[in-house]
Figure 1 (cartoon, rainbow, N blue to C red):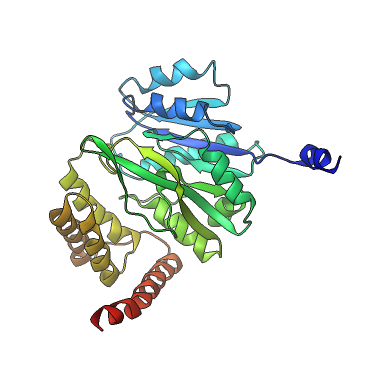
Figure 2 (figure 1 turned 60 degrees about the horizontal axis):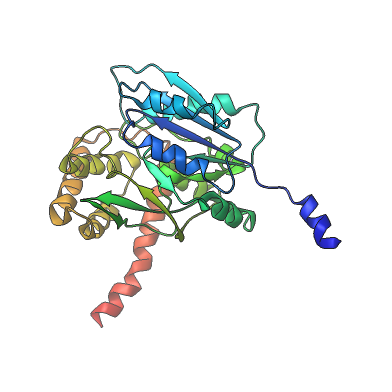
Length: 305
């Protein structure tokens, strides 16, 4: 009887999703179908078509009748698009979620597929740790004909599958639009700044169907250079950037990719371009980065011994 009563009182967590899609006709159908198979479905999934000129809209329309939890919105594009456009599209979706009561809000890119128990597993982890503000699994990325493991840190999360506790999302003020992107990294830093835990869990896998940053038909070398620009505008400390680029040697294209990322960073650093994030957040990010470097010193001293 006690077990039955506890089951009756059990309240399943309610989550909502937001996807900003632009010219994702090649992938979005797989994304929609993977969410439709989830063991715990989202209460609402706002898909914003951010000015696509391919068949993205036609594919979304196919599923609106069967998947009642999907709500579709089209917004016109403009000629001044940059990486911040995704965040503006997400904020339009947030307005549509205002009257809805939910516990978690997720950002899902339109080129990702997830196992059917993905959100059930992540939500269970959330429910067992109230201090957890942002969480996700880890992504395998499609590259050169196969899915490869991405470099990840347990204290960081992939922007394409970020899931936020609602209180955390509201606490940090949502995502900050940045010209060169990096809004996901800023969000997790601000969450930690507000004493929320941020974690990724390697036992929960998602699949990214194209290389990060290639959504605008950019070549991989251009992507590496732009990543360096992004690192600068995200507020990465110059010393920490050296370590980031050394670590990037593990990912294709190996040495040249790391060099291009560092050159992109130095390019903006030498120009002393303005970093458009609040000063308190910038100071926290750099303090956090230097703290991580400091923790590495005992490791290097052991290597020398």
